[in-house]
Image (cartoon, rainbow, N blue to C red; front, side):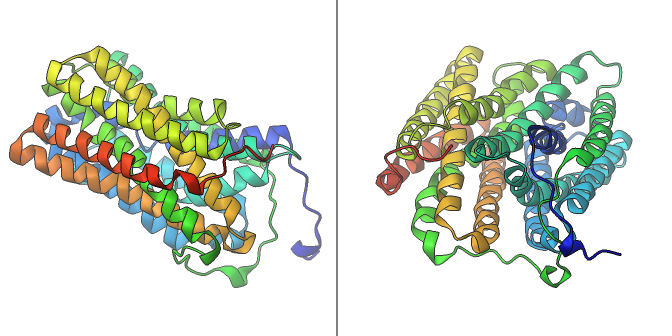
Length: 401
């Protein structure tokens, strides 16, 4: 039998890039399918804002655990075996959600979904980059982050639409997702394996910020925190705001509004990727601040129109800050240290998804949903403006392909 190290690596192609982007997006879809269905779960199980935020936090905990435990395994076993494991975890999560009772299965399903997301957040991101044809590195970087964030949005949109019109709204969205996952498993055949497996690298991925990129990491992390916080709160508390404040209970409408955050993020990342990093940081920060002002006004005026505008601008701001920060940190880090750097970046991001969501949910139980949401909007706006002082650290001119 030939030594795997002696086998030539097949070159990346447009097809392999499309295949891994599809698989990445489909797995990430599963992590947000419950979001527009929370009002239906509330009717079935009787839980409210605190429980939905805990469910979201359990998912984020699964992501962080996966980043640490599985982050280096793709170097030891190869990218495709680990990605297949992520697809299987996602399928198991969908299966548990189709059962749905007892309530504890939902928590187990969220953990499995988090494990799948963690695998794709680390290994999937690297694999997208490795499947970029010559000269398409910048496009691949945008596709990696857009597949991540866009997949989250597509899961919300699909679940909301299917849940609104299906006879079994707590079952059918997961069946649809399971079918998409089977296709994703088959699509892995087209993904190029670009590393030679080395079992000596089967170690736990310790989060660390390399010295050479520490300054840019610290400059980027404020925007990552505020942007991810918006994603977390819109996904966990957003459905309750629309139900309690705006009187909207339709899964389709809830799914469409929350989707706008993630969809706008993905579109902005791809459409504006060619602009200079410093321009993107400034534009993303101002978009986020205006979005929080619109969110506060929408809640006080009970305006769906302003809430939609807030979701779109918030998504644009999140996407630009997330993409630019990740890109800048990656480019400033030596290749052998990039996995550590990106793992640390995503761990901070997923902590930002869960902790503000939990805090807002708990605060809403104490003082009410409207005051808690206003406090969240004010804190995010202030932190984002504070982060603008670091804009000068980013490159003033565009580079790369």
